[in-house]
Image 1 (cartoon, rainbow, N blue to C red):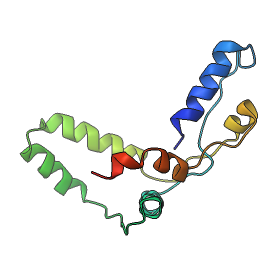
Image 2: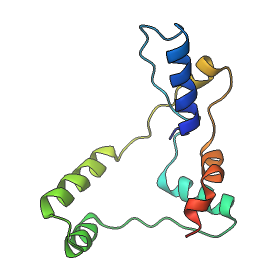
Image 3: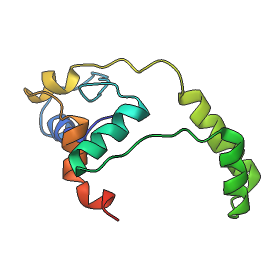
Image 4: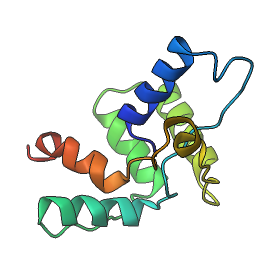
Length: 119
């Protein structure tokens, strides 16, 4: 997870200076988080109890198809999610190296977007 403000800052540096010319940088936030951890952080920031509950793939597929999504689309979407499951992604310090400050946390991102979680 990476804050869009950090992406914008790195993009601005790339466009306005030669600092990143010819470099391929892998940008990440400061931590790799599980779904459970992200849900807990959202709950903490919003001051409400939340919990993460995994929905079995077959149940998710049935629900989406019943709501009108084409079955091939749903199968491709679930296959993409399955590919993303597994070990946590490696975290880099590229944002800090480029911007001279640590990458923003997921809690900061949630706080910046709290209104989106209120509905």
